[in-house]
Image (tube, helix red, strand yellow):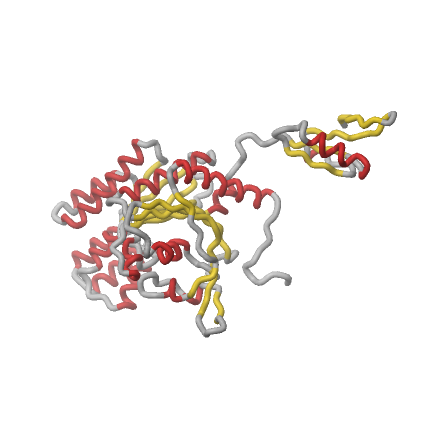
Length: 374
């Protein structure tokens, strides 16, 4: 009644945990050499709806400005940062961001994200650094029970090129692959190509599991150098992550891109406890084509809300309540400093003992203030 549909209030622990997660992210990013970047929350819709990005205007929070242009609340950080950095000097860059994105096609409309963008790095360096950064950040939060899933959008794209597909059928096939509808993938591919290609695409639906799947497909595609090169990239990445102590690694050779600008490896992280996706990203060189730049770009974004739900402070601070009155407030404020490193809450009335580790009361006795523990 008092808020638009999809908007929500947050308070207490949910807010506290989110800010703690974001502060941990900033600390890890700084220590790994990332610079901070922020973009406006209001952008032109055309930044996100052009052919290079391909986002759906219907899913954005939008309005017409005084000049008749459509403006939106930022629906995607990566695209916004690409716009901001498109004219920057072509040298290795590592950027970190934190803030909200807004979309109407999900509960809540506002999502809190933290992420990284890595530009002008050699092939695989950006992807591997993104995933190593993810491991460092999750470790700082005390999260070790997670799975990294690797995919490569060009595996599917290379096989689809052998089909004669129009736009509508191409989208139907992509959606069927995304939804793991194997029979539909086979039927659409067979209708627009040959049986061999249809079988390969349908098989990708089940090409999911441990890194041994890569070895199976290296043998299966031993005569396809283009596909073998992509598998080798995934295998090299998995090896480095494993040797660096990252979480369990899975591969999904049937992953398809959800935005046109992805152009190589894709990856995401799943929390074993909840099954939720806590981060996702990949390579997106094509995003910078709009600005006429030949840019190597990779990165990922963390779902701050998902991480905040799981986050627990390593050693919660002791919580002290000081009961005072108007006359003893000055004394209470001075007393506060004697509880260094504690949460100190000054109240003028009795407090619930379940909410505090210690409760003390300031009493005026014989003309002097004394502190009595309750």
